[in-house]
Length: 171
Image (cartoon, rainbow, N blue to C red; front, top):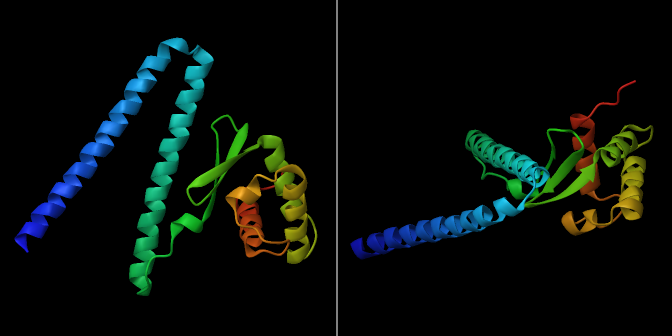
């Protein structure tokens, strides 16, 4: 039994070493590419790194909150992998819709259009249908990210609620 504990520790050490080696390999590759990039390319990489760091922090906070909520409710934590999240770039020129471990980027104009769609008059099924139709017409890549089956899919309702909560229409 003590041998299993030692084996488990060795396995954890190997995984950590492999992750560190992979990270170092990627960092080395990035260092080689830096001299070839212009300042615009470097600015882009820095912005993406900041967005990624922010997303990692949010994910950790969400996991901690889910665990705390589950502990207080006596239930198993729900999977954060199915939750939607929207993050904007610092410049506000684009937004990332995250679902699970993947994301899709929307331009500022596309996000404004989505905000108008979900805030327009209509019943919940009508709003879902308009949202579905817009995705079907303009951004079919969303269907590869989110498993939306039809015009009344619950994912559309969840997404519409998130957009309404996250953005307000200015008069």
